[in-house]
Length: 126
Image 1 (cartoon, helix red, strand yellow):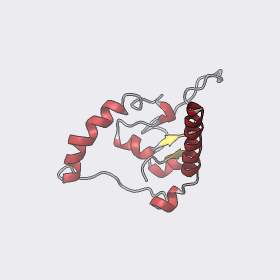
Image 2 (spheres, rainbow, N blue to C red):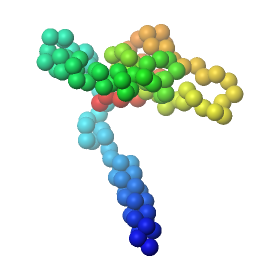
Image 3 (cartoon, rainbow, N blue to C red):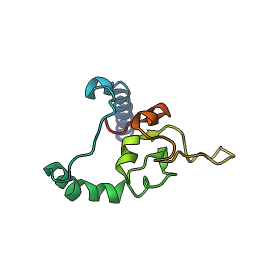
Image 4 (tube, helix red, strand yellow):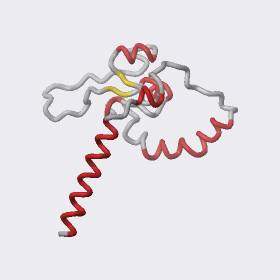
């Protein structure tokens, strides 16, 4: 009986969390999507903190999968331009597709961030 109650509570918590997440309006919380310059000077304390603390984690945990053109969601985290381009909802890996996908190419298929948004890419930074 106790195991059943715990299972039901876990499922209820999962559904409550998903419903809360689905109801969030990120534009209202963080502001609308804006295309902006995100590069910073290397002499700033923020850049130093990024190089020492953040970059090693991102390189070891994220860039491993998101570093090439056939990365999931086409999110390329190995370059500033790839992060600014964002991700695509088009699935690169889909088992039911019979023909090869045509992933987009950074620096080839669009020049600006706005062109990537027009091509269906969504931002991963707000």
